[in-house]
Length: 155
Image (tube, rainbow, N blue to C red; front, side, top):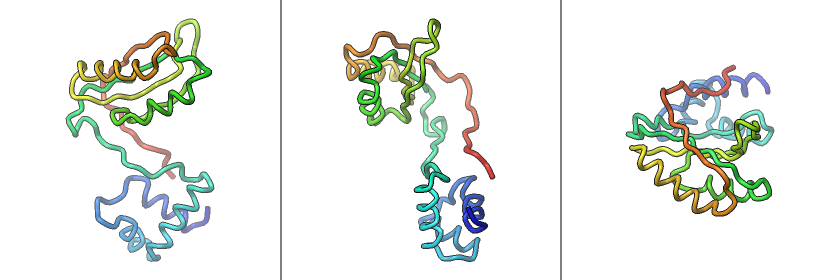
């Protein structure tokens, strides 16, 4: 990572400006061409220095007050395929596999569901359960109690 790459990361890490052309805005701030900003970000992603560039919505501000992390004990032989299917559902914001911590924690698949009510979260969990079918042995829903500030690594 050279000095220009570092300055691009620093300019982006608190969030992109809500403008039609945010990379042009960064380019103006840094005194370089917008195409160079975009090319360097693509190269940093390809090299693994930048994992992703994406929207981090404030679900509470959007009216989603019932946020539930659904946790599932899924057959290990099927988890990759099923995890991809669950992660593709429109109401799942993120889905990932984690190791079990037996005997107390049998869950290995996690899927975050955002909704306006707990009842809606539970209805969506029923849809996930149908998708998982006979490959799920146990499940639960963990509800958010407070908002934590979400930030990535800072330079």
